Structure formats: C-alpha cells, structure tokens
Image (cartoon, rainbow, N blue to C red; front, side, top):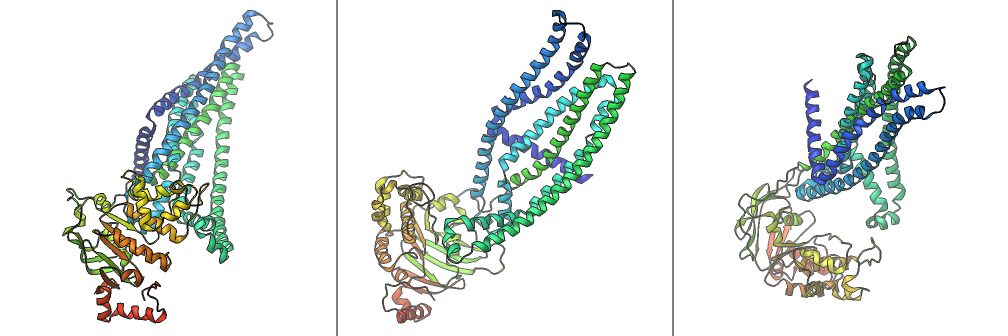
Length: 612
C-alpha cells in the first residue's frame, strides 16, 4: 500500500513538473489547449442527448407523408446534431494545429534543457557508463514524452468531463448502468498498466544494449571510421554484432507484444459480455413497453460510447503511468548536480600570472579506478616560461591539463596559480585564462575564418586578428589557396566543403588556440601530425607568439622539447628529472638515455621520435 502511494505521489510530481515545463515552453498555446479540452469534452454528450428526439421524431412521422410540419419535426433535432458534429470537426482541426505548435516549442525547450545540462555537469561524468545511460534515457524522445504526458492528462480530463455527462444521460434509466459501464473497462485498464510497467522495465534494462546498437551503427556509417572498416574488412563483423543484438531485442519486444495482445483480447471479451448483458436488460424493458425505441437508441449510443470513453480514460491513466516513468528519466538527468562549482566568494583571477603554477602534494585517481594517476605530486611551472613535459604513455602528462582546467579536482593536495588555490576562482574565469590544444583536436565543419574565431567566441571576429593567428600557426597559405579563402567551408559533411589533411587540421586548431589570446597556453602533442620541416617552421613561430606568456607543452618529440626553457621528465605519475636540454644531457639520466638512443637510430635531430 505504501509503495502504491509513493508511486502515485511520484506520478503526480512528474505531472506537475511536466505541466510547468510545457507552460514555460508554450504558455499561450497551453491555455488554448485547456479551453478546447473542456468544450470537446461536452460535445459528445450534447450530441447523444439529441438522439431520442431524432429517433422519436422519425418514428412519429413514419408513414404520415411528406409535409412541411413533418420535415420541421425532423429538421430541427437533425440540424442541431449536425451543427454539433460540425463544431466538433472544426475544433479537432484547431486542436491539431495547437498540438503541432506546442510540440515544436516543447521539443526546442526540452532539447535546450538537455544540452545545457550536458555541458553543465562535470567532465568526469562522462567517465561513467551510468551517466551515459542516464543521458541516453533523457534524450529518448523526451520532448515527445513530455507533451504526450500532458496530452494524456488533458485527454483524461476531457474524457472525465464526457463520462460525467454520459452518466447524467444514463442515470434516468437506472443507477446501476453508470457503475456497470465503469466496471466493464477495468480488465483493459489492468492489462494496460501491467504491460506498460513491463515495457518500461525492459527499456531501462536494455539502455546499454541500445547504446551498443548506436555504437555499431556509427562504426559502419561514420566518415572517421570509414578507412579502417574498409581496409581491415570490419563491415561483416560489426554488422553481425549489430544484427545479433537487434535480433535479441526484437525477440524480447515481440514476446512482450504477444502477451499484451492476448491480455487485451481477454479484456475485450469480458467487456463485451458485460455490455451484452446491459443491452439485453434494456431490450427487455423496451419489449415490455417501458422504454421507447428512441430510449433504446440513446442507451445503445451512450453505453457504447461511454464504454469507449472509459477505455480511453483508463488508457489515458495507463499512458500517464508509462510516460511518467519515462519522463522521470528526464527529470532525474536534469537534477544531476556538478561537483566542480564556483566558491561562494570567488577570488579575482590574475590577469597576467606573475609567479606561475604549482602542483602541491596532489593525489588524483580517475572515477571508478583504484590506482592513483598522481600520488603526492609536486611541480612548479614558472610564469612567462616555455615548459615541456615529456614522458612515456600513461605517465600522467595529460592528466595535468585536466586538473589545471578544473575538469577534475584533486583527491588531496592543491593546484595553485600565483599562490592561490584554483578552487578559489570562478570556474569560467579560470578557464578564460587558459587556451588548450588537445591531443585530438576537433574538426569543426564551418568556414575557415569561423573555425579560428571559435577560439574566442566572446570577442569580435576581427579579420586581421584571425589572419594573424592563421599565420602564426602556419595555416594561412593553405586557407588563401581555397576557392573562397577564409569563407571556404571546411570538411565534407556539408555541401561545397573542402577537407584538410591531419597536419592542416592541427595547424587550424593551433590558430584557434592562438586567437584566444590567453595568458596560459597548453599544447598536448601540438605537432604530432606535422612532418619535421613543418614542425621546425612552426617552432620558430611559436616562440615568438608565446613570448611573455606561460606555455606548457606536452610532447613525445625531442625536437620540440629541446627548445623549451625548462624540461620536466615524467614517469609513473612523478617528475623524475628537470632542467634544460643541455642540463639534462649532462645529468646522463633517463632523458639523456632516450636522446642518445634516438641519435643512434637517426643522426638527424630534426626527425621526431617517441619518448621511450
């Protein structure tokens, strides 16, 4: 009993939240929709109440010939009934128009809520499979279910109005008739509620499976994977995985549908037996002369429509129950609270760092992992210097970027900027101070100029500054050779687009990073897609651009690291060596060993190599 009350409270809570959501998205359309509900709810009863007059008028004039008086007797009730039917059709068309407008506005509003929440939650949430399940469930036609839940509620209210009107019509023929009418629809309601619950449980259970389907589909249809799928002949393998999973889910769906169909058939038989008994009782009263043919016609229409209305009403309840379960996923997602938040009284961020950045006794492990990536880690990055961090894969180099950008907070210890813990700054203000070129930069499919301007969307898109950033990264000449120059569309996703090579996309991302004009520049493998000659050219440009700023370069390439003011060698989450290129060679440690190994395999120092 307690669980049922909680379920009812949950459904009511979801209804209130859904109404508030729809009201916020389309309040004027919602008012019009509510007025239509009331009017449409009364029309069926008004039409049926005219049935005895029409039938009795027809009986009265049958065989009495064609005359103006006879036609008038028929014309008035028939005309009224036709008028009601016409009004009903007009209102149905208006209702369809209102629903369409509502649906579009609610869709945009809910999509906006999901998008806003997706970029508000912590970066770390994407490390959890459970979060991705929640996101997928929230996006599962959330706007459609929101509107459907409201429409179900509206239909429930409309059917309730109609039902009371029908009960008032039937009441003079016996108090038991409305009760019988309601009882006849109970089996259908039970079947609907039970299978809606099963459908919801199945949907929740198979969320991860359905995400696998989307993953297989992307592997087979995405341009980013097209080359490997063809070269290594993956198509049959991934298609087989997709179809095997689809076959299992389809079988489970069909099994649920078979049980539901059988349940509905049994419920329909029970309803027909009850309706047949009531009709036989009314027919007996007519044969005894207690009721007229018009009364029988009214009863038949009222009981038949009343039964359909109750089925509809109970169906509304079932759909409300089902949609409230699914819409709960949306509200659950929207209630996720980020942990990386601003302090109550943020400290102003230094406009230009004077001392630099310091990692002090930092311990950090990624969500869901036991082993820490960093343990009591210490590192100082002086302001105004170019610092290179080198090390093998998994040493924790890229983790430093994520912590400095406050995508995560350390488990213990602190990260300080000019002696102030970064957790004391506004998150947005801190990130505004930083520009990052990530290891795998995103190719934005827009114009070349807009691609660069995205580096600082808060600033005016000054053409000369965009061009300066492109020249600094070495992509300017390529852009000028495009048919429309800086107005050329990039990428092959949209018409008239021009694709770039991996190194050119990387240079474009560098231009975007330079355009941001940030005081802290972080580059993660910035030249990994460039050839040695292009890398040398870029290095000369970068030193000039980074002058006076704090630059952090994470790289495997010695040709890049050797030009930094300070080099830190990182291994297993700790700094094991520090110094300039020449100083580290003199120390004859890990850096020197890797450098000499490279020199033995290639006498040219301009050829980049992975740090061993």
